[in-house]
Length: 76
Image (tube, rainbow, N blue to C red; front, side):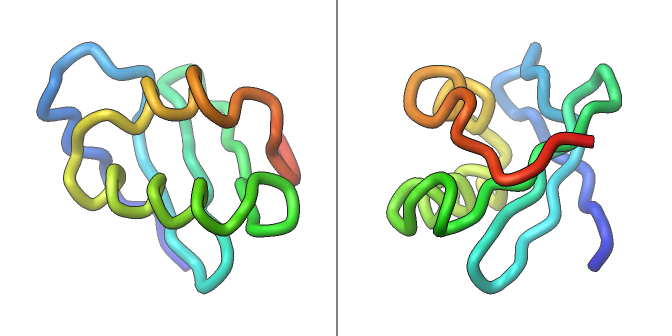
């Protein structure tokens, strides 16, 4: 899978790029750190909401900060 550039329509997001899988989303922040959020670590509803926000290009960093925070599967 390949990272797609996050549109950041709200301007000022900390998200740089994302990659969507069947039961997960990977999010790369502007500092270069990437987090994998999976159904198992974050919950299905949260992951699906994050996918929608990523595709829309708005609200992803805010959602992560206020809803999922450290509930990621892996950081690299």
